Image 1 (cartoon, rainbow, N blue to C red):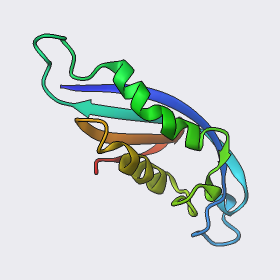
Image 2 (spheres, rainbow, N blue to C red; image 1 turned 180 degrees about the vertical axis):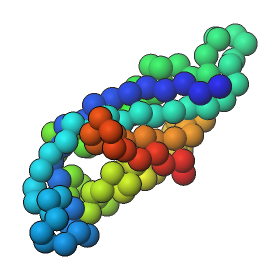
Image 3 (cartoon, helix red, strand yellow; image 1 turned 90 degrees about the vertical axis):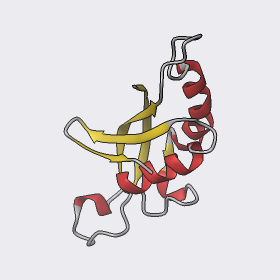
Image 4 (cartoon, rainbow, N blue to C red; image 1 turned 60 degrees about the horizontal axis):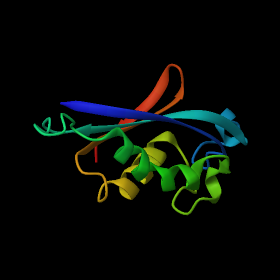
Length: 117
């Protein structure tokens, strides 16, 4: 079974891998929706796949590192595409969040990425 928690991160960025005339080459911002999915069996004692509080606690330092920041200044996010952002988040959570199966980033209501490690 899959369970998920969603978080909003407001951040600025400038994509460095696009041509200079590309709109995303300019500094701009998004309110990113981050969805963390945890997959596993339902624990017969707790009734949970994962405790939402545990997912929120695992994400708290990642949130602090990203929210209201200029992502290009975050080490490892010098070209902060949504693809790079999802992989960056995965690397910080995979060891401490058992069952993590996907990190989804939505940068607009209609565009996003899903990273599955």
